[in-house]
Length: 107
Image 1: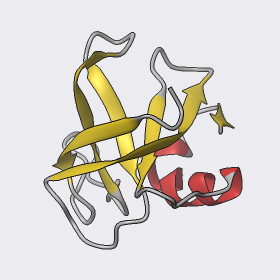
Image 2: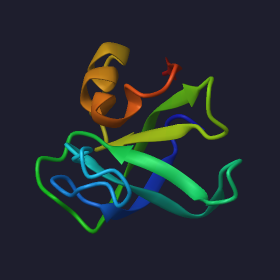
Image 3: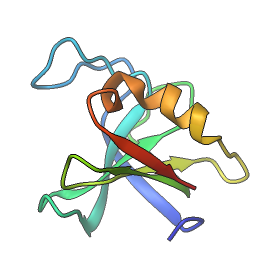
């Protein structure tokens, strides 16, 4: 799975506000992978790192999985081909939302 090419439909572009929690602003593009369903019954969520502007869709490589111990779903992390991030960098870039969960980064 890690290393696969993934297309993310971005429904929460960077700079947008969470639809239910107006104190959460997306500092990275965030969306879902069509046709792949997570354990919550919704399409698989994914963060897009390494892109510095809002996008509607992004195709890149799956570089990590954020495994949440206190939630039913994991989050995927997608980046441009050849771009990698350390676990610490992923934690820092997704902290705007992931700080509310107990998780680990699987590289």
